[in-house]
Length: 312
Length: 257
Picture 1 (cartoon, each protein chain N blue to C red):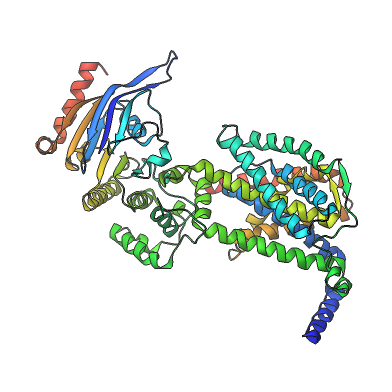
Picture 2 (cartoon, rainbow over the protein chains, first blue to last red; picture 1 turned 180 degrees about the vertical axis):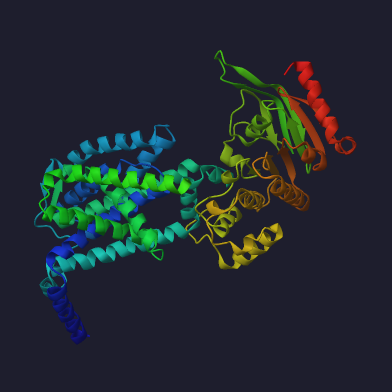
């Protein structure tokens, strides 16, 4: 066993040093992380047709909760789970505000997002919180110090890939279940859900809960990677994720064998690569969100144009 | 059995534009009656269906379904025992899901929508058999999203879905109005088959007087929120389309519209 293990370690060592440069893996890692956010936003934006702004708050919420929990010595994986559950709670609140109180979808998300800003400040205590010396899900040197010789980015890559695959498979499975199909019907044809004797409002709340759960979960991973909580890290989450989802959908049109969830994750990596290349070519990082918005606008316009062309 | 007692319904209550659709309206539909409802536009036919299903609330009065008062029951709970086919073929099915997935959803109605797989392999053959019964060649199109099927095909599937499980009551809301004459005939014939086979109590709103006369065992003509004509099975056999048409003209002269 031990020999096989050593061979595997050596194999990967050579592989990374030869094939992957740190920059490339860095892009993929960021893409994978935002892939989880995009999976969540895929549920609200694409399936439910609900522009859920509350993700801009649940992403830093996952960060702040995890930062504080880790500083208090909690197991990093447990922090991930707690972030997911708290994210679900945020989704439920947004859903209740929209469904039960009758506030419009966009506004109910904005309300929750704005409230979360203060809550995040309260949780973390201040706008910036470094968590330098705590154990995270990426601290593999605890298991075996030699793993670190594989390179920081590669270890991160393996861990992120595992998590993303698990998330994707779980979501795929859920969307095939009775409950998942009901969720898909709500966005497609609300009347049908009523005809099936189900309360469409409750289904929407479930969808929002899962979506925000995913986003807060991603926030938790993000802060464990960066080891730094920043109150403004959530700004633009929805816009970036929507861009990822749309790019993913376009990729899926070319490669029909891809599942939507896979396409969304790939879309997220492609988007990251584009941004990284742009910055590499001299784009000022300060302009990033401006560029993102303009880029998304262009993508949306192209999409609308395509749809019109099909209708004609 | 369904019963409306002293039902009153106003649109825009309290405003200048307030219009009364029903004022102390009474109607009783017995077990296994297949009622066709005709009437001019604005006579309250669709409002009646919406009141029964709970899509819109009543101002006063009561509704009973099998002797249970359902006046304040939300729409989705009433639909446990009611199946409804809409005028718009896209209302009855999920456009992005395929036929099998749609039928599976309908099959699971009134059962828990849990975290187990929806589409069961052994049910697919059963569904295909039911699709064959429709005679529209749909059994070979099971993998195609509902949205790319024609209106008639969608309506046929919607009909199948609404009667998939045992229901007490079938509501047909001008369900052939958006179809071409030939497809409409096919769907109407199919509806009749299903209603008779499953011994359903059905309520059909239609503008097609031929269907109203030829199908069902009771006929109601509505005008300004009242049923001005109510024919039982024997009376209905003696009526022809022209009689109904004349009645329409009579009303128009009488009420000046």
